[in-house]
Amino acid sequence: MRDREIDEFQSVFRRSIIPTIEVEKIRIDEIAILSEDCRSVADQLARRFDARITEASSDDVHRVIDENPSLIITSSSGETVDALLVATRIPTLILRGPIDFKRILAKIPGGRHELIEQFSFAFALCEPGGLIRLLHIVERQRIQELAEALEVMPDVDTNTDLLEAIKTRMDHLLRGAVRTGEDSAFTVEAAIKTGDPFEILPAEAEDFSLLILGSQASHDEFLESRAYALMQRMPDISVLAL
Image (cartoon, rainbow, N blue to C red):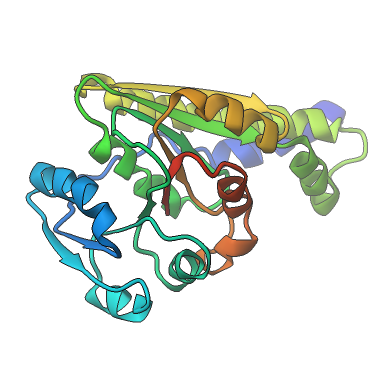
């Protein structure tokens, strides 16, 4: 009986496995900058993507949003960035130090699967000869919360089975992304870590120039998300917020 229940439990996760990450061809047609000190990075990207650059005041966030650019670049902080992060789904590049596009760390959340396509930005931005590292962090606290919410069979070692199921699912997904990048002019690698993201991510990000983060919850809840808290904890690395 127990074996059958475990098989049924695992099959739920197998059905939700995504076979590959479909990396979209990201087009960057218009880049909005909120201050002149973003110009050099915008110029670099504009040359690469044949994009036009528009400049707006950081005090006029809504006009920027109404223009619906492909990418927003800002070096601002505080309320201006916070407003952007919750008011628009436009990818926002926050410059917080020296940046190049040859070493990109993308923290892959386990929730919103529409974000998987958005992580195509990592593939679009990485320069030839560069490295993309796709990182998923499994939090044990989240496993416990999920186990309690599911209230699965009492005979099942819930924490262990959930942990292994999630690892298997994410490993399958991330390996798909690595396969997708095999013919690229840069290297794609992936890793799954278990533990506290506030300890793991800063250590992982030390050798990278750009961090890509997306909220696991809805975009409107970005300011309450782990992605935002992690971004605040790591003030010296530039962030592309999705």
